[in-house]
Image (cartoon, rainbow, N blue to C red; front, side, top):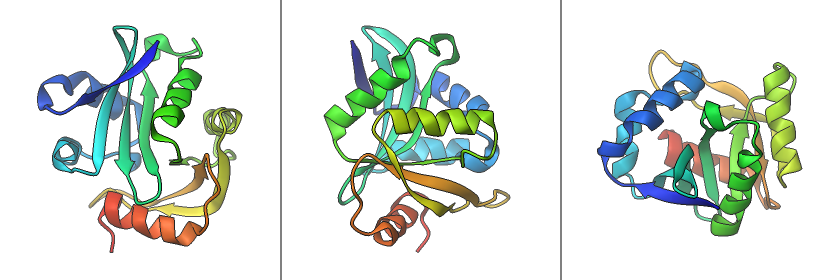
Length: 171
């Protein structure tokens, strides 16, 4: 059974940060201080994903006004290709309802195409192919990404503005 354990202290973050740092390119992630600061932000949540009692991955989630934003999601390498990713997404949708996420464009490379197809198979739709993810900070680039959701967005620009303001600190 897939379930989520919210992490509220720095003690359990070392494995998650190590995986996060090795999996996500530098332009798509926070530095260590920014990452640790998520624990102090009441709108952000870091969950270790467990299959029964075994940690199999993590998610970083933000509470927005009308939905939750899935900033980062990873199944640890040794647990990939076991269909756990689909189970995690199903649990997220059951627990948090309306979800929003960013993903690299499917035309970037084979892995990006596989990732987009994974989200499409799991109930998401592309709501913008023109989305720009702001930079995570000095020396990092903004990114052209797809914006996806598992619900019908009334106003894409409004949610983009809230996302930029709340998650990336861009006003």
